[in-house]
Length: 453
Ligand code: S3P
Image (tube, rainbow, N blue to C red; front, side, top):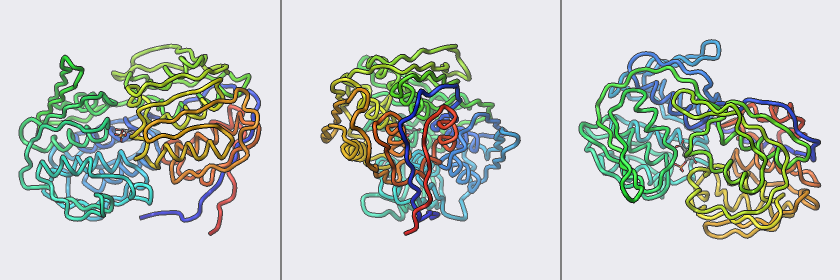
């Protein structure tokens, strides 16, 4: 395990209007899958716009350890895959660092191979529940040779000689679980079926079909999705251009709304409908967000977003919207802190098992910085202070969570007093260019010296 033991705090201060245009890095979900599927497919994949964050690079390392050839040439990633069914047994453990998506999808991918694979991660990842992926794998015949109490990392898997195809109803709204089962099915003879009662991001289905998998999706009369994948088919290398990550765009987007006199354009943002809950919610709150130059690129909707500062008002965010904005609640809670009235966010139980318990991390950070809020088991209610008077002045604990760090740094740009975070290192997992891009807009964010223990 590679862990830098020294936290690196950062502070943000009330800023004048943010202006300019920027491109956020490539979508994290699509980038992980581009390396996984490219590394598995026969022949060459060429990927532009890949997110070069730590999480995604670790997925690339794992695929290399199992036989893929992955190199970067002039900003383009060139991947020679092994061919479906032909991954090699890694000779070392696979270290996924902070990455839930990388580790869970790869567990699915290798879980049906007759080989041994060991998974490790950082302190945050080692606390996260893996049973949600191990349970269906066990049904397919995978042996969990080693796991820590509660099915946590480090975990060692050994797949069966011949895995069994299953029909699996995903018990929580999780694209990672859906994806892990489908990826396991790639190496199983017959049809693997995933039943998805609540639709989550559909990048796995769309991209696997693009790589040549035989897969069909049917939505029944109750809106439940049935995804059927035929195993052991041929996957072929593809050319991919990864659009900008809406979950990273969320930070400059909310910053531009809450810092007065801002006018910012974020170019080339993915607008897949399973990812646009935050934009919809902020528009309902009165946010001035224009979608410019809407287009289709590589089978996905993208657009440039023009955002101008706005007087926001509180709204109720319904539980059924949660899957389409699951990673955006921390920064939505920051936007709500500057809105008039109450914002009620419902259906948040999955926030408790992210890189941190995001529900309590957000509530604690907001309270410390003078925001009135109520945390329930699966909801959060925030009462805003338009203009941010009296807000700020404290340090938010980030618990090795990149999105908590970026959210509170955004808060400090509009609060009366500065806002600090105890550790900004994890920002590099998903948005390595966060500091320079925010500074270029006029955001006053400063990274402080590493704290020696
Ligand atoms: C992701 C799915 C979501 C999301 C994560 C990325 C994916 O996790 O929070 O950042 O790429 O499949 P869950 O499946 O746990 O909801």
